Length: 250
Ligand SMILES: Nc1ncnc2c1ncn2[C@@H]1O[C@H](COP(=O)(O)OP(=O)(O)OP(=O)(O)O)[C@@H](O)[C@H]1O
Ligand SMILES: [Mg+2]
Image (cartoon, rainbow, N blue to C red; front, side, top):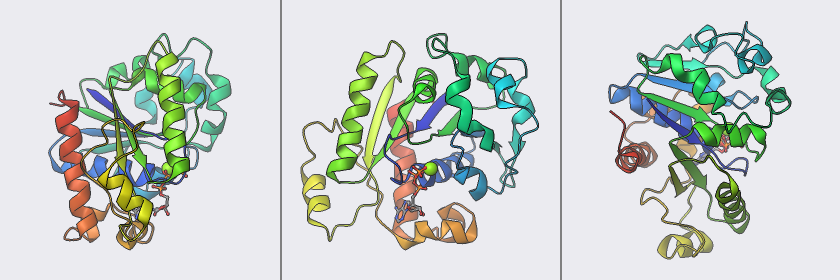
């Protein structure tokens, strides 16, 4: 079972759109997928029409008093299950203990899922807190959407700095350009020549497109309502490139 987390310290960069589209594409490729919505905003939970309220308290989950299986819900998509975001997650940072990342708490919670799923995709909230560090510790591949902007690059640099200081961090960090608009000078320049601090961005670029905004209208991944569009094609390339770079999804 591989764990991919879609993360950036910066908000509104396309994390949820990426998590939702990758999760769907993974099911299309025949994988059994678990999407873990760890953002109390619950956006991916909403896109997949899952019920947000969990019967199990988050604090009992992180204290390992309840099994994770209790909070997994199926979706209308074959091969895709979800752990919905509960609004109670807003307190997760307080519930997590200092050493939880080091002991691999989240990976331990997911252990019983190992046989059932080939891939877990985590939709992360935009923060660099204890929760983020606990997520990093369980992650194989950290997928980071970056809008070509100075602030977005700065957030990426802050994350890379932090990761260097942690004992447990993802095996691979994969930044990629998100919401790209080639009419904008900086977007064009950074695509032609990425800033030196941006280490090996993926070749795939996700363009800025109104098709993605419509995900809210359809409450579905773009492949379902606009498969022939350039952005749907870009997500398919993104999926393939990440599978290749991950190297161990089977
Ligand atoms: N490629 C895109 N083109 C146009 N709009 C996009 C694109 N990707 C995402 N959006 C839109 O931008 C907004 C933010 O996207 P999204 O929710 O995926 O970002 P996020 O990083 O998960 O945000 P948050 O940090 O709040 O969780 C949404 O309204 C979404 O529809
Ligand atoms: Mg989000």
